[in-house]
Image: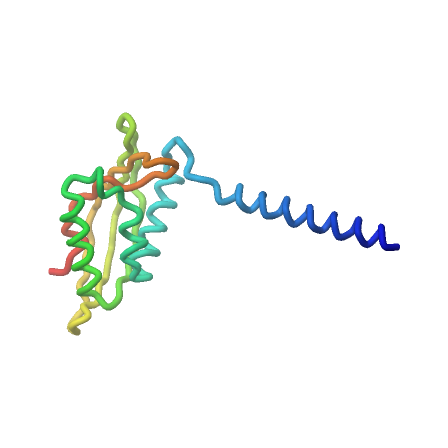
Length: 153
């Protein structure tokens, strides 16, 4: 009876270990090849960061060291998040293309940002172009144009 209980315990323990390993494998790093699915996932993360008002999560999607004027972009985003109370955004992936070791992602973007100082929300509709590059085991944004999209008028 005791050996049966021990065997059941070991089986359950092994099942738990296998399940834990399986769930870790499901949280796989970004694929090495960029495609529309990877682009969509990155845009979803960007949307969640904006709507969740998470400046840290938003900036974490960018490789600011490789980005032209990365520190200036960081300041712009700090200011944008500091000036907004809430942000609603819709990003519609229009096109992806490969350019050597980088990819371009064209997006139709709509955003409504409510100023923290009160007043009417600011609404923007623009076509954005993101440049994406591999950064270790992840894809990161290394450029976005026009950058003015992420600022209040």
